[in-house]
Image 1 (tube, rainbow, N blue to C red):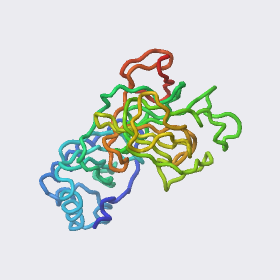
Image 2: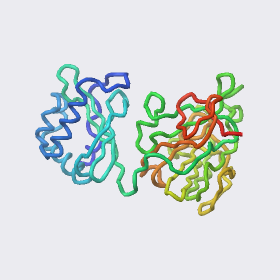
Image 3: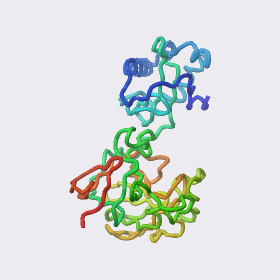
Image 4: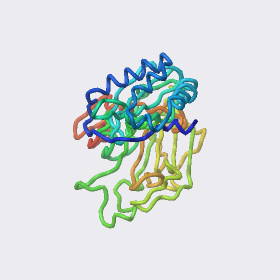
Amino acid sequence: MKKYFLLLFWMCIVGYSQDEMPGYANAVSQFASLYNAQDYQGVYELFDVNMKKALTPEENRQFLSENVNRVMGNIQEWEFVGYQRGAHVYRTLFDRALTDILITLSARDNKINGFYISPPKPLGAPILERNTTRMIIPFEEEVFVFWGGTELAQNYHVAEISQQYAYDLLMVKDGSSFVGDPEINENYFVFGKNIIAPCNARVVQVIDGVPDNVPGTVNTAQITGNTIVLQTDLDEYILFAHLMQGSILVEEGQEVRQGDPLALCGNSGNTTEPHLHLSLQNTVNMEEATGAKLFFDQITVNGEIKTDYLPVKEDFIRNLE
C-alpha cells in the first residue's frame, strides 16, 4: 500500500489566485477532524464519485491508518501556503512529521476530487523559523533576487518544505542575466563570481566534481550540483548549490570566517542557467530538511539600507561598503 503515499493525483486542476478559495478551509478542517478521530469512513465520504471509484473504503482505511497515522500520528495544525499544480497546499504539522497535503475540490459539490500527501519530514531536528546568526550576502557585488520571499507568487521554493524560503541569486545588467550567446556559461554575469561565507561557521558537507551544464539543459540526477553546507554554532545549516566544478576552496571539518572565499558561482545540477541557490535549513541533508527564513543583518536593497531584512523577488541587494 505504500504507493498510496502519493495518493490519487489529480482529477481536476483549478484556480490561479494565491488566496484560499471558498470551501477549502472547511474541507481541510473536516478532513483533519475525521482523520484525528480515526473515522476513516467519514473521510471517505468527503471524496467525490471519481475518487471513490479510484479506491475502495478499505484501501482508504489502510492508507490513512497504516501509511499516515502509524508513521506521523495525528494532525496538530495546518496552514494554507499557496498553490502547486493548481491544488491548494496545506503545510501540515503531525505529531511526528511535517508534510504538505495537496487538495482539489469539485466545483459542483465541494467534494475532494484530488488528494496528495508529499513525503514527510521527520521532526528529529528542531524546526527553525529563521536565523539568529547575523549574516551578510555571500557575494562581493550586487546581486538580483530572481526567487525570494515567503509567498509562492514571489518564490516558487515555498511549495517544497525542504527549500521553503530559499533564494535564487544571479546578476542582471540592462534587464538581462547574460550578454551574447545564451548557451555559453561565461556569458552570464554571475558565472565565476566569488561566493563568500555569510558568517562564521563550520563546513559540514562538500560535493564536488559535478560538471557545469550547458545553459538550457539540466542535471536532474544531481539536484544541487557542486554544493557546500555550513553549520553555525546555533545549528543553522546554510546550503550553497550549483557551484562551479572544481572551484570549491574548503573541505569538510574546516572552520571559516565571515567573508572567507568558499567557491565560485556555477551552473551545476538541476539548473538551467548560472545562479546561486541559497537556503537555510534545520539539518545538513536537504532531503531531510525543513527550510527556514534567511534574514541579512545590514544590506543595501534597491539603493536603501535595510536592517534584519529578508529579500524578495526582484530586489537588487548588496552588502554595505
